[in-house]
Every structure is written in structure tokens, then in C-alpha cells.
Length: 273
Image (tube, rainbow, N blue to C red; front, side, top):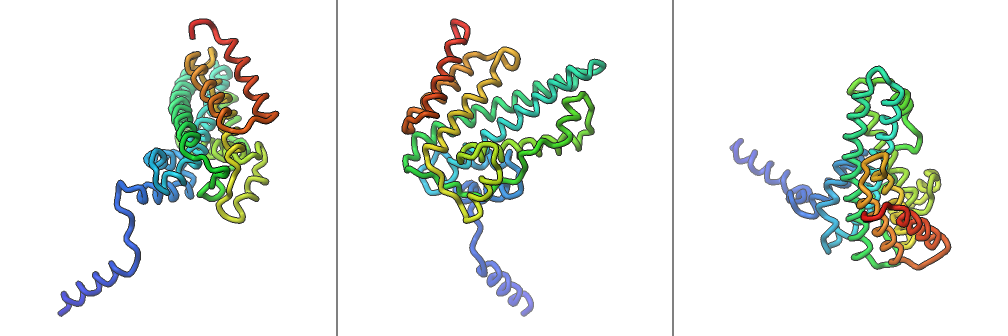
């Protein structure tokens, strides 16, 4: 009798709520992305969104704008952190090797994020033609303020592993917050960006979002400059991606000025790149 009651109870409890999404389905990846985004784990968020953004269903259309924000934010976070480690290598003349190794590792991760970002922008520009894009998320975890440990690194101080991990997480979150503000048309103004999210999921003009994406592509091409990864072909590729993105939105004074800057920088690349 007890066994029968247990089976009835188990059946009732299993049917009392909605079934979770099946692993590997778009609903599963979207739920996972929302969960990791809410906790500020943007690396995992980016991985989950990359499984969705190439599709044609409702989850893909939600994922594409957020994927652009997250991948660009990760790239910026890694880029900025690498710059501080490079500065630290110059300051810590007694033992610069760990700083140089960390700079190299971070630039490699930044490069992966930049290429992921460029692919995400292409997909969004090709597939999402509505005049407005919905950011199906809340305001991101993080702050635009530099973490105090960043100055320690730049000054040549050595951090414990736990401190380094916390700093990296904070810098990636900072990158996403800064990128979000830029892509919604409020560069360096997190307060104004936060206001947009108070009423729920904001709707952003497509032209505003893609202009910010084009600028981010151009800005992040600095990663491949001669004093960093020294890959001029990547600079050319990202610059062309930025120009192509600008072609998908109505021209205005700002877009014309950005296109002129990009074209001028392309002319400065050494021949044969």
C-alpha cells in the first residue's frame, strides 16, 4: 500500500509543474543563457547563445542581439585586462614573465571573442530587418568603474589566483555593461542605460544598435595592431565588416564620420595585407 501511495505521489508531483526543456533544444539553451546572464557569468551566456543565434525560430531572434552584446563585452573585457597586464610587465622588471604570459593568454581569448562578435553582427544584420530590436534581458550585472585590483596589476603587483579570477570576472562584466550602453545609444552613461530596462525588455532602433556594433568592430580591431597581435589581415577584415554593417543602416552624420575614419585607417595598413 505504501508503495502504491508513493508511486501516486511521485506521479502527481511530476505532473504538478511544467516540464523543463529537453537538453539540446533551443528552449534549453535559451533557459540556460537567461540563467547564466542573470548571475553575471557571461562566458557561459555567450556559449549558450552561440547555439541559438543561427536559427530561424523565436529563440534565435531573441538570442542574436544579446549575443552581439555579450561577445563584444567579453572581447572588451579581455582586451582591457590584457592592457593592464602588459603595463604591469613593464613596471615589474624583476619578474615580468608572468605578466607577459597573462597578456598573451588574455589577448588570445579576446581574439576568439572578437571573431565570435563579428559573426554575430553578420547574422543579426542579415536576419533581423525590423526597425527595432528587442533586448530580451535585464540590465547586466557589473559596473563601468574599474576594479581596484586593475591598478595593482598595472602597477606591477602580483595577485593571488583567487584575486585574479575575481578581477577577470569583474572586467568581463564591466565590458558587457559598457558595450550594452554603447549599443543602446548611451555610451559611457550606465544610468541612462539602466533607465531603459526599468520598464522591461527595451526596444532599441536597429540603426542605433548596428552603428554601435560597427564602432565596436572598428575599436576592437586595435587588438591586431603591430604592438599587440600584429595581424593586419584581421584589422582589414574587421574594418570591412564595420563598413559593411554601416551599409545596412541609413546614413547620417555619425555614420559618415565613422566610415571615413575606418577608410582612413585602412589606407595606413602596410601593402600586401
